[in-house]
Image (cartoon, rainbow, N blue to C red; front, side, top):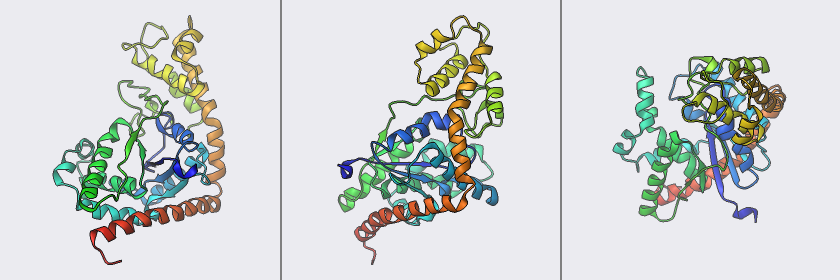
Length: 331
C-alpha cells in the first residue's frame, strides 16, 4: 500500500526568517501531507543565491531552516528531508533541461520581471534560468504533486511543459506533475498593509511575524496591526485588516470565521488584537521549543540531513541516469 502513495515535492529557500504566513499558508500543511503522501522536502539553497548572500549568515540560515522543518513536525523517518546543494543531480539535470527550454518561455516569467526590477543591480543568468532548476527539482523525484502558491503556478506550468517536451522526444521518462492545492491554509496578509501578502522581505518589521519571534514581539506586532475605524469584528471586503486577523485566528485555533465573529461580538479591536497575538504565540511556542533542541545540537542536525541527502541522492540518480541514457551520454 505504501508504494502506491503519490509522491510530493516541497522546497523552501533559506533566504531569511520564515514567517507566520509561511507557516499557515504552507508549512502547516506539509506536516499534514506526510501522513498521506510520499514526501520529499528540500532546503533550496541553490535557489537562494540568485540574490547575493552573506556567506556566514547564509550558512546559519540553512541550518536554521533544516532545524525549523524538524521542529514543525517533519518526520525524517517517514520522509526525505535534505539540502538541495548536497545532491549534484539537481544542477546536472538543470543543465540538460535548459537545452530543452525555449528562451521565450523563460523571458515570459513574471517572477523574473519582478525580481529584475527589485534587484536591478544584479540581473543574473541564474535568476533568468531559475524555473529550469525548479523543474529539475520536481522532475528528479518523479513528483506526482507539487504544493504551489499563486506566485509559483507559472513555474510549475513550465516544468510540465519541459517534461512533456522531453517525453515527446524520448518516451515516458518524467512523471508530469500536478499542482496540489491544500484543503486548508489561508493566505496571510501584511499586518501593516493587508492588501499585500505577508513577506519577510518587507522592510517594515511590524508587517510580519516570524515563526521564531518572542511572545512579547508577537503581541506587540498584532497590537499595531492596521484595522479600520468602525470597531466591528467581521469578515468583509471593505475590512481587509480585520478579515486578515480573523483568518489568522481561525487558522491557529481551528475555529470558523463565524465562531470567531460570535466570540468577539461586542468587543473592541484592542481586545481582539491581543487575543490573536496570544493565540499565535501559543501555537508557535512548542515549535520554538523543539527548534531550540535541534539547533543547539549541530551533530544531531547534521546526521539527520545527511541521511536525507543520501536518500535523495539515490532517488535522484535513478532519474538522472535514465535521462542521460535517453539523451545518448556514455554512462
